Image (cartoon, rainbow, N blue to C red; front, side):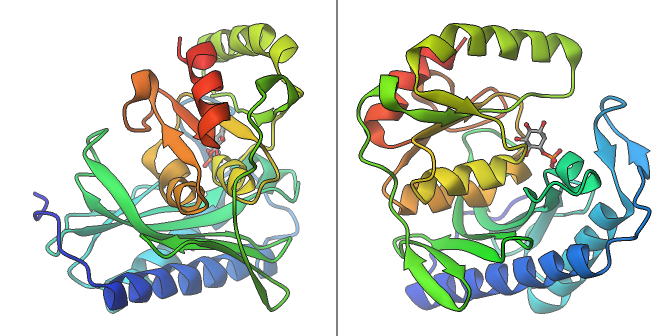
Amino acid sequence: MTATEPTLRPAELLLLEEIACALAREAGDLIVTERPEQLGVAATKSAQTDIVTVMDRRSEELLRSRLESARPGDGLLGEEGASRPSQTGITWVVDPIDGTVNYLYDLPAYAVSVAACVGDVHTPGQWRTVAGAVMNPVTDELFHARSEGGAFLQHRGRSHRLHVTAQDDLALSLVATGFGYDVGKRRQQAAVVVDLIPQVRDIRRAGSAAIDLCSVAAGRLDGYYESGLNPWDLAAGWLVVTEAGGVVQGAGGAAPSAELVVAGGAAVTAALAPLVDR
Ligand code: LIP
């Protein structure tokens, strides 16, 4: 049962953003400072390559307990199973470690993603993010935004306002993407890249949707697309891109969902979407 969409005043949006930032930072600190020397695979999910580590679980438990005490009436949806219905109309959608394979390999491209959302987060097209934060604890970069509040990057004590690039030529665009865990799906995704790669500047594969979306918002990429994402992979990054002046859409121009996410400036998204929406 989800409560109807609440009317959120600017002060409430600011509070939700501050909570998202504080929790993303704290969980980010945990996964770096308490990373076991011999980090292994604790379990697998949809495939043997779709892994969970003990730190994914500890990070989610930290987020769950902090939110339970700070926001007892809000709902929760976490990648590692945390779930609670909302009484307030707000549901927190969290990815305790986005880019878990990078984390396992100690590749410095993973993040904690924390988003406050309204609507039904279990139904594509029926929810949206109103405040969120993405923390890359290795680069000490905290990306955050709230509705109508703009998007920012906090790094080394300084805050930078974010803007997507003004690139309008796909042939000169740097585009990122990602691949799922299912072999058949990967083959389909690779076929899209084969057709796309002659039509763009180059392709990047960072391994974290949250970081890819924030890189679009920061102008480090001109575009990003991926199919097969879960709400927790895209919830916070989605708002960071739109508050940085970008566009985030799904298949057929609908809301972003597991079917497809395409993000970038308006021109690049419009040119990219028909090439990857298949
Ligand atoms: C990852 C996504 C990434 C995708 C990976 C994986 P996880 O999320 O952020 O974009 O390509 O296959 O889904 O599993 O590390 O939270």
